[in-house]
Image (cartoon, rainbow, N blue to C red; front, side, top):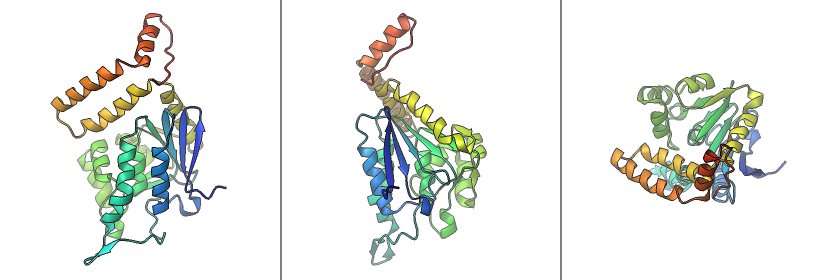
Length: 261
């Protein structure tokens, strides 16, 4: 088996990125973060991304036993600096992808692992998967954008419950809360997620990429600013070959054959 912390694979136009630390329940060390960040920046011609772990775990969160050095100043350890140089750039790159991202979650998605899953566009979870904000259990605050992602996805009351009580959110509850999109039998998670990623990869890539970015923007911008963003995105989408093909297919009453350009 590869000793890479992130194993990459291409399945057609889908880039599969797999967290590969099964002996640590896919806990995230500094190396894991760096390799995932690099993989997300080097997608090449991929038209969608599938992010997953293994059969036992998506990711159990930060690897507290990794031995990674922690920056410090006169006041003591500075875990914020670790976020600034590692996790925050990773989450921003995931947010700014030009193609859709699908997460396939088995087992725990805990701590920053939860954040990585929730930052994807579509999330498929196994029946025994769960999501956990464990930060307060060790005297820390949620990071990896957790408060933002949970509050925007499930609302303030449920986000507070998840973060303050630090209790597991089973997959079915996560679905009811609006945090994820599908719950399937554990053995069907990756197959289902890959089918969704493949469907997205066959779509109008430019329009899908701008759609996902518009959704992120809508969480933070005014209605007026969002309308202006829509105007610019629609102008650009209307100049793509995929738009011309979509209109032609509609008029000819046939399925469109998008090429991602």
